[in-house]
Length: 225
Length: 403
Image 1 (cartoon, rainbow over the protein chains, first blue to last red):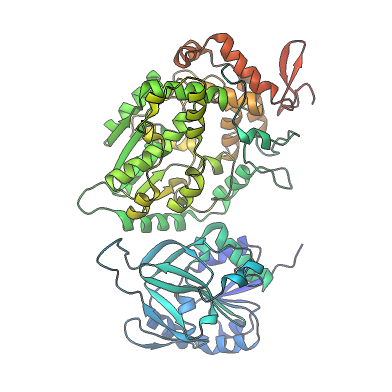
Image 2: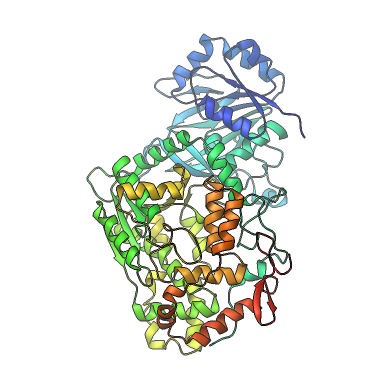
């Protein structure tokens, strides 16, 4: 029996905390939900969930001093995981209803999907459905042949083309293309759906709503990073 | 017999050692089922998740999001519900229309021949407020395909299965309705492949893989031509198009996606039955179906009994096993009760429609038993001939000749 790993889920009034808590438990971990900056800074593993608008999200984090606790936490090199809005918040800035500064843990910005084209299939925004995640186009095919670029990452064990459940209107654009671990396509946009830099991970979709593929992500987060 | 051989490749994959699930009554002979290290089958493991792990409120939210994406504002059909008017399609279509405000077009791929109760239930279903398209394929060709499938695949019912899925896609493409709803994934709930365990849908990408690669119907036609069952004239100009899905490009163009309702709403067959008695005029059979104790499942086709009987010959488990296993998983029966029911009913011969079946396939009783014995003899790990009588080597209550 492996020791049961702990995951701390940040409660800042934004997000489906209980589905995430359930998913962590189901994957074999212990989950704690808290808004206490001290507990957040000293967590073993940290999850930043999030549903809703960027501006409100960032001001809630600041209001409670959680932003400072997150900065302290990421210094420890322990794994940090942002989900959906939680992923967007770790970028520098967002253009959602005005310009907002993010946590800036990863360089880049958050922009709206392009308007769907008038001709051809109609892609509604928000993007609410199951979509594939794929190896980034920047990775050369020859590198993929040897071993999966997702080996040893939060996506370990998954195949390019695996489906996940998305609900969002904005997409993340990292400055450094190498920080995109996976990409997805919706409408005319190819966007970064999983981001990675050092101990920081983020995904645009909801792994806790994505069945067994999502389950693998929680297991990797708990046991393999 | 015309050929004296089988084309059923899944028979080669049966494990030679027969093992029964520790929680229910199914065995490892069921195609694609997996027993885990504790001896528990994949369907039981899924049932545990269904009743204890899955957050059904969350799943319903996902259903609402899906429906919002497709719901029509002008009353045009916005989803297709294929079904027979039985408890499952009745439940799915009624919920979609009356609870979720959708505009379903229900469609039915007809059974080989309706039973009285099946026809009554079909009529009651559309009478509870649904537009329905009922499709009967060409009767001559359908019978011939069924005859070929009986011998070559050990299941005369197979041509129904081709059309059941393909017809739904045909209608989706022709009416340009991208969303299709099936009830439950039999693979998951009854045991089988768990590849799509928690993915609620298939799209044209999957269909390419699943249905376009070496279609079973082409094998049947080829063999039918060789044996003179079909004439060249009979099958020219694509008369079997409804058995084949439309061009996958067309499905991509309309953005077709097929979802299982059982992913979004907890699906319990017995509860669907009560729901349909209440809402779609569904009636159970006055007498139990042959080979099982149940009165509310799979009762609209005179061929059903033979589909299950052939499974009994090939796998040593039949309809009562399937029904009892599902009800054990849903907590309606204990395992001991399930075993008693299997012991009493499983594998009983479907006498009620035997004459009809022989007549439908245009075969004699001798030919029927030749085919049965063909499938018994290629299943030596399932059956043993003891003094001229075929007996199961192993059964769930440990009463087989080799137990």
